[in-house]
Amino acid sequence: MTRGGVPNVKNFKAEAGRGVVGSVETKQVIVGNAEFMKSLGINTQAHNKLAEKLQNEAKTVIYAAVDKNLVAIIGLADTLKPYAKEAITELKRMGKEIIMITGDNLKTAQAIAKSVGIDRPLAHVLPQEKAEVIKSLQKEGKSVAMVGDGINDSPALAQADIGIAIGSGTDVAIETGEVILVKDDLRDVATSLQLSGKTIKKVWQNLFWAFIYNILAIPIAGGIHLLLTQASFGVPAPWTIYIAENFGTLGSIFFNLSQSTLRPEIAGFAMAFSSVSVVANSLTLRRYVPPIERKIKQLKQTNYEKT
Image (cartoon, rainbow, N blue to C red; front, side, top):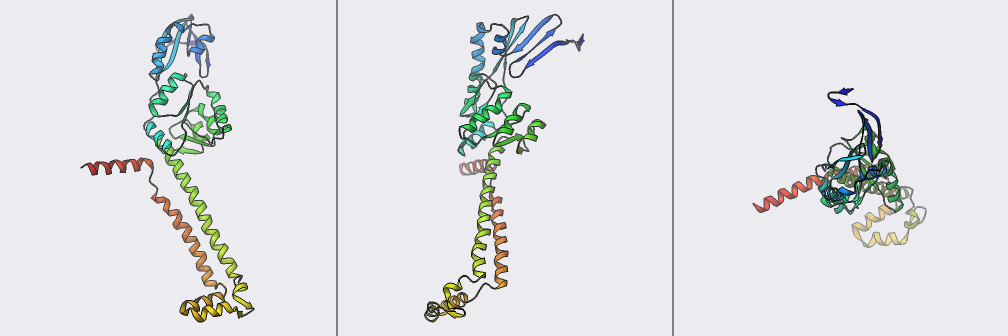
């Protein structure tokens, strides 16, 4: 039986990250990597030189055999995502270590890593092993952010401290990731990390200002300062009288404040000012410029200076 002139495949079997085997008409067809071929007793060593040449060109080498006779060597090359190199450069500028996890052989992984500036390629990693690699990195004391877009990336995204899924990826990856990049632009990885860090910083700043008002205002409203500014109930301490008599207008203002508790309208103003300061501090996030826009501005400025 054929479909559109292409014979049907029978007894089809696939091994994730290694290869596939099936029967086409009366012949057994095998397609896979060198390890898969070796496990089935097919010798590929005679073509090691050609395979090494393809690997040095950042291509994945796939072998094809019919009835266990090698008939073809195929070099497959993934196209890098747009702006991958720029994204890696920005992340390294932020002090991040870039690690690539791939099922390719080491030479292909090293060639790709060199072309985009990746620090540490981890090769020969099968799809089901990616999560274990993330665990081993975490055991090294690293906080791991995993970027992925495929079904095979989902376990690793779940295991990572931060799972970043690309919006154009599979539904499983998107459901698993904590951060979803709407655009298919890897530079947004740096943007998301920078913006989240600045947001957390603002949260702590806002908590500080919110608490400091209450820490200062509540004791004053309760009159705790009167323990220092009054000798007894309603009787000013001698040192406050001295300041009032010798420091003119400022002394009088200080004396009046030292003998009174926080009036309700002032307390209300302090509470409102606390909220306003928190909102105003949060709005400063609008000044954040993503790496993409910052680079464009720098290029425009450079071109302007040249002209």
